[in-house]
Image (cartoon, rainbow, N blue to C red; front, top):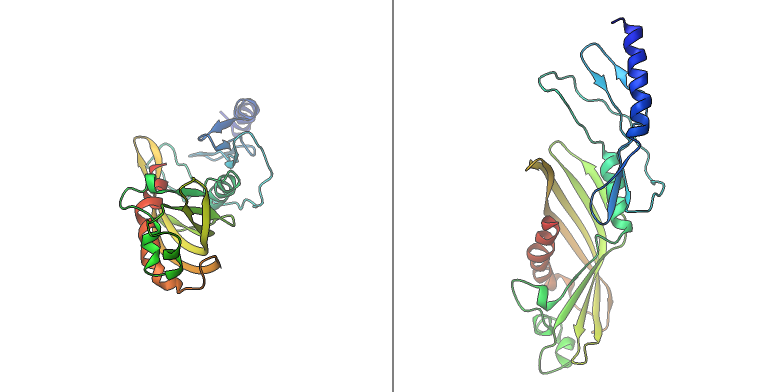
Length: 246
């Protein structure tokens, strides 16, 4: 076939794929991905390039992305039949979609804590005012919320995720109501390594660095640094495994 005939065939294929691949696939209950063709396939002698949109958005809500996709190229290699590459834009829209749906928010209560009983006694030795609530320790609930869209940066074999959020610590009273003890600001830096397992792209989250600061307190002022070991342990043993389990 001549080059012109090949281009004509590719154009016909593009027209067909543009209708059949104007498609949206559900990732999970929270997000979907638009993998429609974004342009005419580029034909070269040894290969064909197909550009797909790769936009992730909240399930059932197709919204404009706050990000701009940057063009990129795949390095020339010929030892495999298919090469698939994801840009930073794909992960940025993923972050935006999951942030919008509240996926980065989490509540940890005593009954869901696997490693120790979370109650006011844990904090009373560091914050004396907490001990005044009751002689009998009250169960404690932690509410973690992301306050900004997590920032994603691609690296060689992984990517980093910067998270800004808050952690509210509440005491659960005998009548099942809650009373806020204090709220901390959180700045966390995590990394996610990618692997293919059972024909699926899987990510493993690792907590690299975390900083706390006091945002509000109903139990007086206290030194946040004294709480960091406890809170970091809770995040390492409860939040990170929960995220990796998803």
